[in-house]
Image (tube, helix red, strand yellow):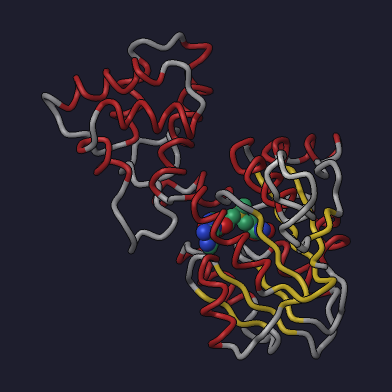
Length: 306
Ligand SMILES: C[S@@+](CC[C@H](N)C(=O)[O-])C[C@H]1O[C@@H](n2cnc3c(N)ncnc32)[C@H](O)[C@@H]1O
């Protein structure tokens, strides 16, 4: 089975590698598509550290790269980058890469509990040993909190109506499965809008359950602090919420002054930490989108440490 087709593969590699014998960190190894090609461009004395929260992805890569002495993998969140660098006696990385979101394997495999195309336990956690499944929150939190999650993380216009329907349903029955949630939404969503509405609601719950946006912000901050001068930070995002965070963070770190606008002269002595390499994000070619529809929303942004 093809577990995941890597997106923007050559574009990522061209923009990430500055030193063939360098030390690299990949936060989201998934099924090792990017990892494999990046490693093929690095020399024998390079070092490669990878993380993935998902146990199936981690075990797959552990086996795939077991004979490569350059590689050390961790079943952990990429927010652990600093702790991991200490364990590995690494001071700075020459390149840091993340390809955010979920893999096709997670989306398509019913045991992962991510798909609304099958009736499975409504889980949506990447690391099932941490936190609570999505069903726990659907049964527990207030109507207002649910509506806020659907609006904020799914940009869903019917967020209040959907939250209300969930709360009415749970008066009589506990919500445990993707089929139940789908059924609740199906009741009042026209057939032609159903898949897009379900995609937005599942995305919102997934972002919430995995704390994805906060983790991304934490990761960016930590990554820049352990990036070597001239080292590259390359991030692939899949929706506007993630992309905005990366874009704004890069912009913030290029600033030379953060004084209030009413100050006549600069008093802050701010030093920019990054230079933006991709003024506009790199997006997949029409050909790539034709071959892999899931690549259509991908955006690659790259910055270089000063
Ligand atoms: C789009 S896939 C990566 C696919 C990979 N580039 C490949 O070619 O196979 C995203 C992966 O990131 C992992 N992931 C998402 N957030 C993470 C986090 N905070 N820490 C570690 N892994 C994370 C997911 O479990 C998933 O396996």
